[in-house]
Image 1 (cartoon, rainbow, N blue to C red):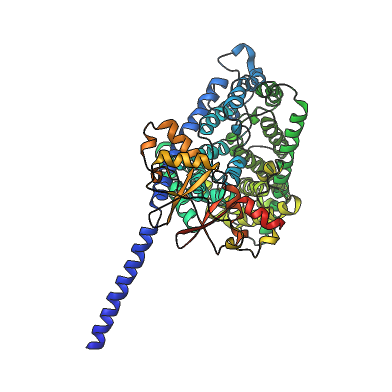
Image 2 (image 1 turned 30 degrees about the vertical axis):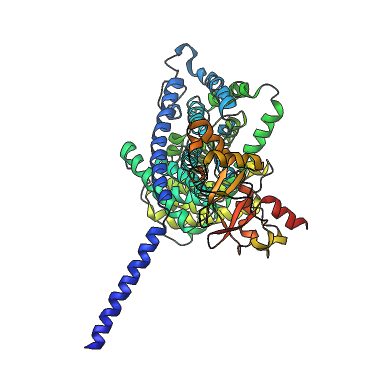
Length: 589
């Protein structure tokens, strides 16, 4: 009996310990980050809906149709019927006259396809993206696409959602590590709401934006993606992006065909990336006028291309659907592949604002459908499978261009909801990613940053491989007490000629940092700022452990521009400060 009683007591005690453990985990969860992720997801979902409406409205204004690429022939614009189908020659130029000055004057970061700017902000600027970028990007991209720009709306919504996340994080004084996560939350929410693909949104943000799969980031990004997707489905409807005919692989040998398609499609993705930047270089070389006028003048060239092939107008989803449905001949599909590359590259090269995500899908669908038609001619038993090959081609070209195989596989699966396609899809994606890595060191996103001298994949310096933070750090700067008058604290910070000062509590524990930017903002916006305490103006700051390896925290130190380094703590107590100058001194000594 005593043994039974002891067993029951052990079970109860174990349950109590387990509950205590989980309760501590709940208390340790960063509630502000969870709440902020949900808010960012809601904002990104609504932004995706509003942005889609802006694109549709701009398209109606410029063409008189909801999507000019879905029309046949060269229908005239009802607003200027006397121009006939030739209005498409002038539409991009008129659009350029509107968005060119807008981008040049208010947010030059809004030019181009957006995702590289977000990657750079996360990797090198601590997640700081100006809030005005969201507004300018939405307007400029909507006008670009509506006036004929052959670009996608996914890149813009990623930048818009990321800017929303960054703005909220800075308003709530999030530390840089959480600010980066909120930027990724915005990107995930934008993709999730646009494509009705919440899982793909998560992996897009983790694989391409954060380049990290940490558990805490994953949870926040997932919450944001789910929230955005729920809002998108409630407003836009819940249905798959593409509907495919029934498909099955009857013979294992057929997988060789999909592997071959992945090989070729990966090369096509690399080709798209190189053509994009080649045409951009040509545009930079040829243009000698003011930048704000460049989209209007270059728009005339784009208009001539659209007049020759109206299917290139705008995002091109109707063309993608027609390719999947097998409505085009092999010859036209191959011409479409090259023409879409040229039109998208020219739109970006003249200063247009829009993404390359959707164009890569259109190119992949056209190339895959052409391959499927060709296979059907050689192997009659596989005829009528152009849609399957088009879908696999979409994923493979995207993977070849971006080298994001997880995102490529998941997003195409979610777009169709067709599980039977998953094995050949993943096989083609893996092969495409491998051939892309052999053919090019850069992706369509990182190439833009590399041309600016930014290498996101640069390894840590070998000399720092065994160095700890404690061996490299410098003494901490003079501290400010958290209960000190804010006016006095700001004056002390100004006299120190530093960008930031650590703020400590009565027991000496680090509370955060007071930055010059936060101090200036408080003085400019709050008349009673001088009457507050230093703790109320303090920004929560990520801290390093003295035993951390410098090689593992190098990116965080370089990205801490607003604080000139990161505080170093032991058991919560400030013991030092690690700045870029300390790292440089260690390397050169």
